[in-house]
Image (tube, rainbow, N blue to C red; front, side):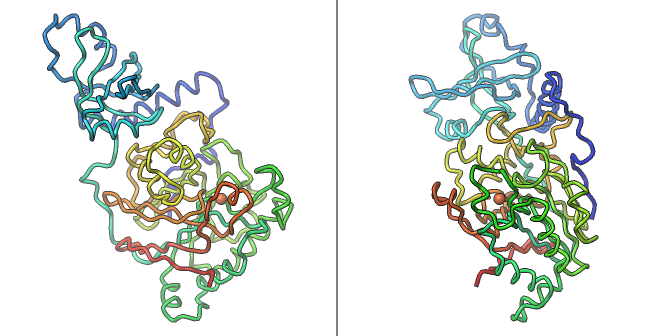
Length: 411
Ligand SMILES: [Fe+2]
């Protein structure tokens, strides 16, 4: 196992203005580079005054630009306007509602994502009429590596310390990992498990939301981790465990989050590796991008058709944008590091997220998208917002063929 990319120990951010500029430059240059391989784009600055130079002749020459979305709006006639910005300037792009597929795609474009647009500039030089929108996406040629053996178990949102933590189901799960299940099939599968990945929210934490203490059985966050560590000592030593933090964990809330601190790590067994959020990890030749998934809240709120009940659909929106948290300054508090750790490059074999407590599995161009569920039954807050969690269901991924088996431990 090797950690390929992780913020831990590399944070450079002190929050100064120039760091935000640098952060967005890195985001733009890396995402635009991915698109540049597919279109011949020119700097936005070169579009200015273009319509006049062409002297009234109907614009038919198509040109392309690549920019970060700085604004989106709908005109009174129901067309879509997307403002794009690159380091040389900004320019508005119009997508007509008569072009059905293009308009549908344009309605899904959100703030701060980087896209390429091909179109023609209007005669007055003030607007580009789009004929094509290109998201960075995954090339069709992306091949999946093979050859690894064994299985990786993906979980998240354990929430140890919560009154809704489903300890019985969790103990059944530990029995499975130990090879102590009643079923022979599960015993056989357990022998093949080589990795266990936890994508954040290992504990419920404290002070995460108002009146949380009324829903806690362990009121001290370090006690919550000590209890969690006890469980992990029960897991056989041949299973390599990777733990990444989430918004309930005891690290900074701004993302990327570093790995849990030594004060917490010291309680855990030696087969646990702690990584940051997000992290790109290599499991014997299979790369897995681990991200807790806070940005799913943004994607559900902004992209039509994306819902909490099918969380893998949100992850699909991430990979099309090649970015784990495209919207800046909404639910995800992003720390402006020199490098944008949220850019999805290289394309991993697996993206593993959590956070929303529902289970989802999708495949997209040889990438396996998995949102693992939770070990916490419905909370008071989730009742109020009508969110039905999918607890104690565990996706087990075969590293050879990427087949997914969902195991249920609440019966
Ligand atoms: Fe959670």
